[in-house]
Image (cartoon, rainbow, N blue to C red; front, top):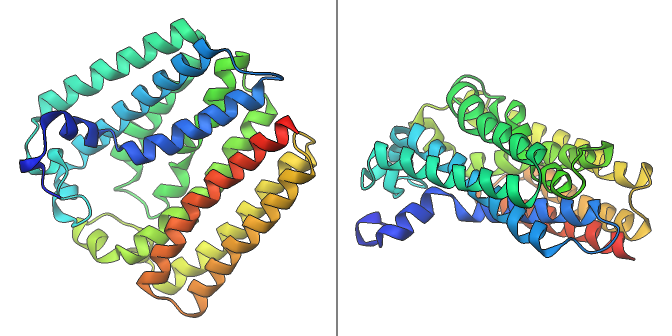
Length: 290
């Protein structure tokens, strides 16, 4: 994909990493519904979702700006308008500032100040702490920095309830433990790209077998984390069965990778991990209304 033949609006759209943003907002919406005994007010649902979307997009735009030289070296990201220079640094900064400010205003008006500041803190965590400090410094970057990416369900919960109780943090914990096996599967079949980039990703610094073992270990930790909503009695048997079935499927992929690695299987594992999270949170939502 080349940004040279792409309309300008789509270039800015690409800076927000829309596929990742969609999954984040989906998890935030699930958090909203889980925080509500009935239906979420439409004003909160639409306004808070838009606010979280805009601030997430602003964070991703900053990420693209900071990593433009790294992105230019990687086949997966070299097409981004930040990497090709089609959009200047100043315009990316201005774009991020504008949509980030719009997101904060929406959250202040349609949700509450706590949600606004918590989402802004998540923006700082991802755009500054993770992107600038952690990612280039340690192969555990995705583990330590995963908290900012795990926050959407708590932000959604806060938008409705104006608080972040233990139930909201259990949802955060699930995404936090999901992130390493999800991302390391990608890093494995893209390890040549990451080696060129100079980023200390785990498959580059510690090798394939070490990464595969850690994918399996973190998958087991993830499965344990997914049982906590049932143990804490925030969900019932429909969710428990769904979590166990999905967890067994994830373990199958992790074990298969460890026994007989291939880039194609790593790619399938990465794609399944996205489906896994979406189905798991959908099961939480269905169980909530049963």
